[in-house]
Image 1 (cartoon, rainbow, N blue to C red):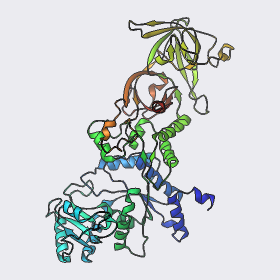
Image 2: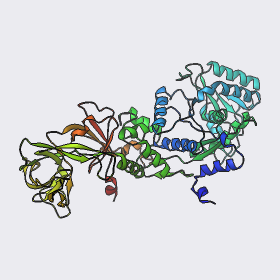
Image 3: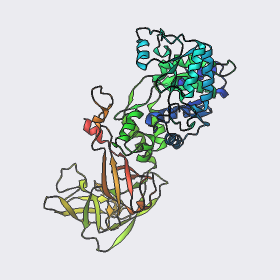
Image 4: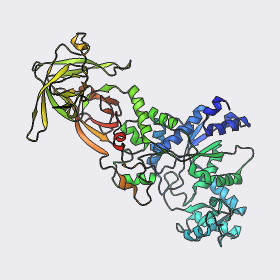
Length: 559
């Protein structure tokens, strides 16, 4: 096998083999078919990147098709959010299509199947039908309604369509084989009655096709060459093929279903039903809460399209279910923002520092690069004055030799500014340090060219000038769950593992260059992590969300 062949994932190998066996390249067409019953999450991003990535690789069109066959759960809001997410990730579809486009054609084909004796109406309870289906090791038994006449089935199905029956009272089933080894082939349901308003077809229909009947026929109608599904649909492939065979015209392309393992992420739940539960019960503040694994939540948290595409590519495509460590996702955003985010200064837990030998009332503006390690970022002027804020954790009265931050009698450099030395501190009645008094070396200003500016000290601290500091609200987000597999415990509810400290909102101070930051602008707060401007941020109400810290605090906790 050539090196190029080895580098292909197994789905690309299938496509290459089909092309080698005579499939014209211009016949390649892919699709991404979400159900609009919730917001897309990081697992869907894997499928988006896969299908649209194949489209780019083979210069083939990709349809965005909404599987809108269940009006009880689907809304236009979800349709809109899905389109926004796909475009934000950097992809463009060939056509926006809907399964509901094909309701009439599916109905017409269904009439043909009934007339051919391949479908029948069943009015048993769902419990009885489930019992009759048997088990994976025991064959099913036929429904007593399986041998209804074609005329009776046509009449009953028309009454279903006309709304003459209640929901749940009648279904239409395909007549295949109740003894088939694949239980999906044991007379599956094709239509059920749902008297619900549909977001596109209104009240035109009160019967709706099941996913299996809709899926393959939609692929066939759209002439999709490769219908790529997640692994749970592998057992449905026989049924997919059977349905397509019933309507297949040999002059048209026959779609091929193949499966890959869905993306599962540690410390996360990926079920839309469970994510909806978190939203409805107020555990999170909506689908785009930055703690959610939704694409909209990740976007609001500060993740970039490039980081998610890179994560999907790095995690790869698998034939077997597995769990991807969330640390890989965090690595991908750190890697991207390290290259693209300007470095600025912010103090999240401030303590006041007075530089006693700096002239009172004086201020100066220091030139500070947005990135000392890369070109093209530019610089800004950072104000400096006698009183500044530093992080509380950056000062100790006494510390061992491994503490390279500020301590009494020792020196540190202020980023882009001067070397200071801690002389004394003031405490409140509880012994908490409220003020640190320092002196500075006036000749040590960074970049001044003086000998003192080249003097080496082991610690460098970020800071903000109190006189010029801008107040900001900072949402410090952490993982939403404390357990690596929150929905993997049969005896416990996934909500038992919700992290009570997943959000900590604090009042912080940032340098004045951030005053005009725009929504979703991303920055590295030096020595702290990566942050972005929240969508609720406004003039005089600056809000930042922490995307990810610079250091992995969880790795330390787990050791």
